[in-house]
Image (cartoon, rainbow, N blue to C red; front, side, top):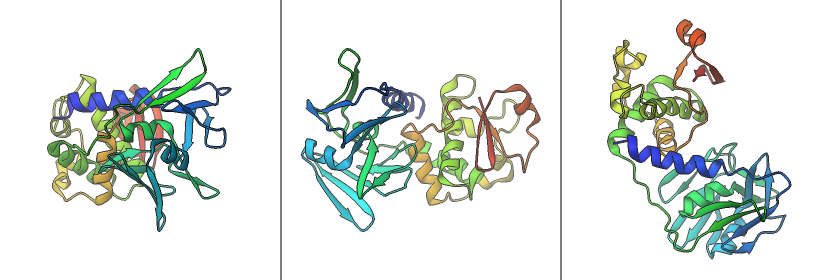
Length: 266
């Protein structure tokens, strides 16, 4: 069942991503070891760290295989492809806002993503203006997706956003899981997909494409959503202007933004 487990994961991810670090603060520590300014810095409230520095301080091995950076050791295997909107960690798919960065041959990731992958505690020390990553006792989580949730979430994403870029597919899944958590809709993925309280909510349920085999990218998007990816925040509605007027949504809900061919509303 998605409701409680996803809420916990989403809360943990949002807490990490919401670790806003003042622009003037540059002190970051991994297990008590300070990171140099060349290995860790802050941009628009998000702390970034080089994968090289993280591997050294955590005793893990960093290698390159083709175009993929691979971090391994201490119960964690993480793969990162430059430009990708995600990394894989022990079979999990973790969202990387803005994508995996490579500058001057160095792979860069948000510290919050690495904390999530390692199962570590990330905190902000306001008194000393420092972000601290605590690894003592941390156990990197393994992939653990509820198969029923993954089945229906990947299918509604695939049917609603086939041909959309990955970010657009994640956004559709984001809305479905927001409905699960909102209290205004049923509290499981399957029930949200087939909800008919105010009429059919998703066109693929009407035309039968909800039962089609999902694309690989839709399955990936579903996993990212189940791990807490939320590019459209708390949005509960979307529509494609090319296919629907969306009159009720556009006049009664707050507009969030547009990704691909869909407009999203809170």
